[in-house]
Amino acid sequence: MRSLGALGGTIRLDAAVERVVYEDGRVSGVALKDGTEIHAPIVVSALGPRRTFTQLVDPNDMPDDLIRAITEFKFQGSASKVNFALSAVPTFPGLEGRTDIFTGFTNVGPSLDYLEEAFTDCLAGRYSRRPFIDCRVQSTVDPDMSPPGKHILSCFVMYTPYKLAQGYWDSERENLGDAVQGTLEAFFPGFGGLVEHREAVTPLDIERVVGLSEGNIFAGELFMPQMFLNRPAPGWNQYLTPVAGYYQCGSGTHPGGGVMGGPGKLAARQVLSDHAGLASS
Image (cartoon, rainbow, N blue to C red; front, side, top):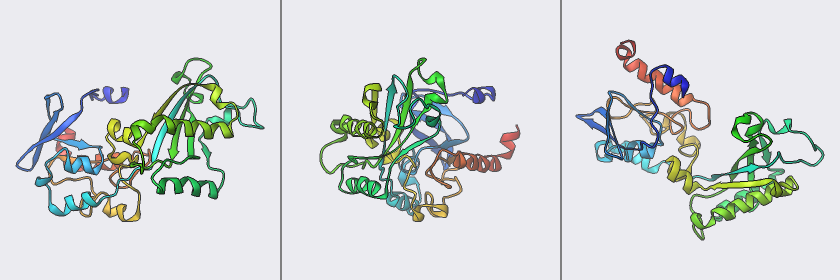
């Protein structure tokens, strides 16, 4: 944020975009949900393909083959998050007193049979009763995240289907948290006694809060038919859109998901190439 500010950029919070404003095939800015309009010759959407092409703009203004490809694009999310505020770092049997082991990521998935069982639950339309967990005690790296002596544990949880076969996520959210906490207790005895606060974030929550369609953390499934030249749609993989000045980036574009910044960097190159005069002015 400080780097952007130093370069003259501004970050607005609580400023949800309602739609992209364009006329005669050229973008002129965005309209916020509160009615405010921000004028700009370039607009870049880091949202997923569904929102970028069918919600921020009128899909009737888009080519039929593009909308057909986006409609068929698979988003089904299968991950959730559970975050814990802890009074101390967990204890792993045999490594008592060690905190350095938590500076990296810890995976809970001891065998192929364990992972198969976890995924079988998801196929049946329920969250894994013994989930695969990718977690990290982030406060061991950034102590400012928590009060002195206390810690934050962030967990990615697999597998949790976007649509449950029975029940609803709003009523199952804490049950998911219980399943994750119970699993961690089995591997880190005494874990439950360290928990001071817990936040469970379901795929539906991810869609609601972050705007990722169907809670897919990669803005679309990373299947081969949805990669490379096909991400997000054939003919539209170079960060362009049918509206001049309106660009796409984010994990729904090439090279796909993961916190690596690749889509943003490549999209920025495309924008700068198209608007070299504007960039130098």
